[in-house]
Image (tube, rainbow, N blue to C red; front, side):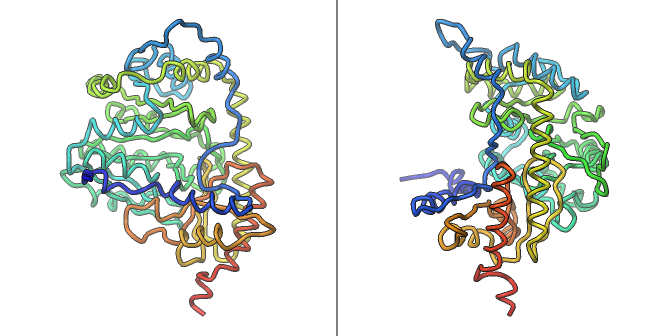
Length: 411
C-alpha cells in the first residue's frame, strides 16, 4: 500500500507512544502515576455542562465557519481583560489550539519554508510544520539557563530567505519557562527587520508563578506578544480552553490577529472544514462568560503548590538538574541516566516500589536535533500533591537502581 512521503516523515507522539508499556504494567497489577501527559485532574467548571444541558434546538445546524458570534464576543472580552485589544472580527474559533496552529502554518508557509522555534518544544509543532511541507529550525536553549532564549545574534544567524515566522510558546510546554518582556521585544525587533510573523502559543497564560531571583521576579506581570502594539499585525495568537478551564476534550481554541487580510485567508480554510462543533461552542461561551475569577485564581494556586512540591522533591535526587518553572504545569529535568526513554520503559517493565511505578515523557521527543534531550524528562504536575510526592519518591529510587545510571556507566 502506498503512503505519502508527508505522512511517513511525521514522528509518532513522544507523549503517547509509550502508553502500551503503561497498559502492560497495569495489566500486571502495577499502579502507574502518570506524569507523562498534560491532562489536568481539576474539575471543569459546572457552567460548561449547564450551558449544554440548557441548549434548546430541534436541529444541530451548521454555524458560522469563523465561530459563534457570541463566543467570539466572549473571547474578545477575555482578551480585553488582559489589555489585548482583539475585536470579535479578529478571532477565528478552531478545533482546539492544535487546529489554530495548523491553520497558521498553512496560511503563511509554502513547501520548503521555515519556522524558528526554541527547543525543546511541544512535539506536535513538528507535525503542524511537516503537514504544510515546511520545516522547523530549532533555536538552542539549555537546561542550565532555565531554557531561556539565547542572545539575538544566535537567533538572527538562523534566519534565511525561507524563514516565515518565529513560534513562541510562553508559558512553555515542555519547560515551564516564561519569556521575559526583553525576550519578546527582541523577537519583535527581528520580526520587523526581516518581515516575519510571530506565532504566540499562549494557552497556559493563566498559569504563571512569579518568583524572586529570576527574570520576571515577584510582581512582574505576564507579558504577552499581544501587548506589543507595533507588531500586532504580525502576531498570530493561539489559544485554547483546554488547560485554562480543564476542558481538554471539548476541543475549542482560537486564532486571533489584528490583520484583516490574514483573517480573510484563514477563513478560506475554516470554510473548508465547515464549522466547529456547535454544542462545544455553546459550552465554551459559558466558560468565558460565567467562569469566576476565583476559579482561575484557585487553579493557579493549586498548580503553584504542586510545582513547589515536585520541584523540591526533584532537587533531593542526586544528579538531577532543573530550574523551578515559572509557568504552565511542566518541569523539564535532566536526569543522570543514559537515555530517558529507555529509563521510562525500564521503570514500567522492571521497577516498582510496593507495586507502584511512575511515567514521564522522554525529553528527546521535544527536540528537532537528533540525540538532544536524551537524558531529559518532562514531568507534568497534573496530579494531587500526595500523588506527586509518591511519584517523585519512586523516581528517586528508580534513578538509584537503574542499570544505565551515568555514575554506574562511568564506574
